[in-house]
Length: 139
Image 1: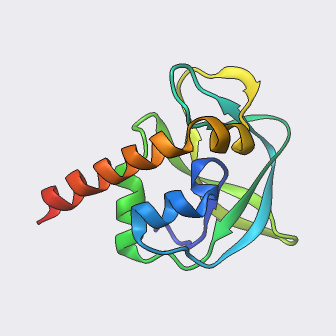
Image 2: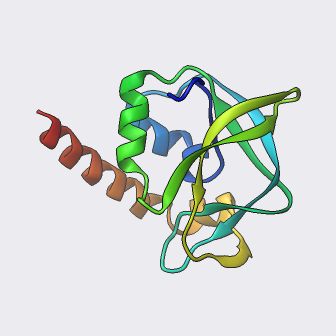
C-alpha cells in the first residue's frame, strides 16, 4: 500500500495472539523504533494511540503483509487512526506506514504488559467476534 509493504506496529498488534486472530498468521517482522512518537493511553479504550512527542515509540515492522491482510487490518482499525508514513529505525533508518491517532488521548504511556495482564483475554474475544462479522460481510 502507498509504495511500501512495511507496517510499523506499536500497540495491540505487537501481540502475536492478536495478529494471528485477525489475519491467521504472524508476518515476518523486525524490531524497530519510531523517534519523535509516543504510545499513549486513549480515553475509554484499552488499546493505545501513536502521537507525536518526545522520545521514541518501540515496536516492530511487519515486512510481508499481503494485500488482503492490509485490507483486513485497515477494516479493523478505529476510524480515528490515519495510515501515515513515518521514519523508523531497525537499526537502519527506513520508511514504514503506521496508524497514528487523530483523536483525544491521555498524556500517559500505554503498557503492553498492563494490557496483557488486564485486558488481553477480553480483547481477543472482541477480535474473534469482529473477525467473524468481517468474514460474513465479505462472503
